[in-house]
Image (cartoon, rainbow, N blue to C red):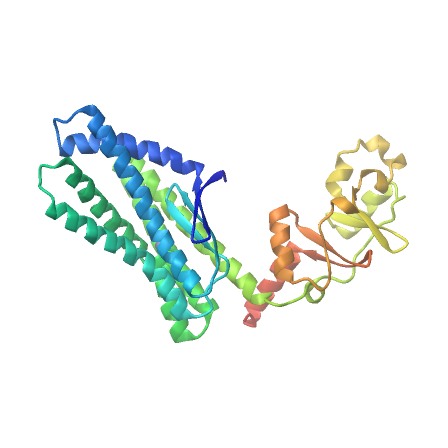
Amino acid sequence: MNSFKLTRLWGIDIEINASWLLVFALFSFSLSQHYFPNQVPGLEPSVYWVMGTGTTILIFTSVLLHELAHSLMAIKKGIPIKRITLFIFGGVAQLEREPDQPGVELKIALVGPATSIGLALLCWLVYFSLPEDLAVSYVFGFLATLNFIVGTINLIPAFPLDGGRVLRAGLWHFMKNLLRATRIAVIIGSVFAFMAIGLGFYMIFQLYWIWGLWYIFLGWMLYQSGQASYSQLVFHQTFKGVPVSQVMSPDVHTVSPNLTLDQLVEKFFQYKFGAFPVTEKGRLIGMVTFNQVREVPLQKWPYTEAAQIMTPLRELVVASPKTEAVEVMMKMAAGNTGRVLVVENDRLVGILSRTDMMKLINMHMLLGTEK
Ligand SMILES: [Zn+2]
């Protein structure tokens, strides 16, 4: 996603996603062209523009304060924060790791909505103390409502919203099991997500198209992020501190570099693998995939060798058997590859594939032996 850095506060990079610029334009436009002219009629058009853009900047500041509250609490509890990104729905503070105690998670989760509701009360205070006919008091009235909505929506117990994190912290505290607590929180979150999707369809039937699509989109995003954070957690818990050597498959079928492609194709048929490492006298020199073979015309197969089409070693993602498995999985996800060769002193000692690790997690979950 395209994000650019705005500033740096307390060592945290504040970034804005490109999608936010669209929201900025949309908010400024509708506030200055519709909302404020309806609330306080009879002002100069330029005044409405100042009110509209000024309010949008303050909305932005409110969202930022909400995320900063989460971040500063996390830092206080010893969890580093890389960056805060503001995007179409609001913001995300990226914690470098998950809290390791329910009490810590509870505090980090609660401080965000508490800040928003605090801001709402503050804005209402200003709104009621200003003269009613003053244009600026409408700005504060709007900000009060908006912050109140942001605070309360985030308190909905739908993981991974703040309220869902509060719920998980509670379950975690009583059940003493982070994984089970997360599973329940994610299921409850999914119920809310499907309710939002259902409401969206109902609105579409009532011909409120935009709102309907918006709810469907939000519900779907909520469902997806719940599922994603659950599998990420399962993964980290299962493979925490486990080295690659313990989870890799040690038996790797290799091919020699001078194997012709028609011989290679027979190997693919025999083993049904998507790729073979290429070794020469026990040393790894590259990897050849089924797709690379497919790109060569059939008639050239008898006199084309594996070495001519393989990906050379220097372009491969390899891992040492001592590296943490979690780290390698992250590398795989980032590099968009499904498998990593495990190499020690130039010799191929094993292979680690994403599907194998997923199968392993599944086995752990079926046996109930996950941590
Ligand atoms: Zn929050």
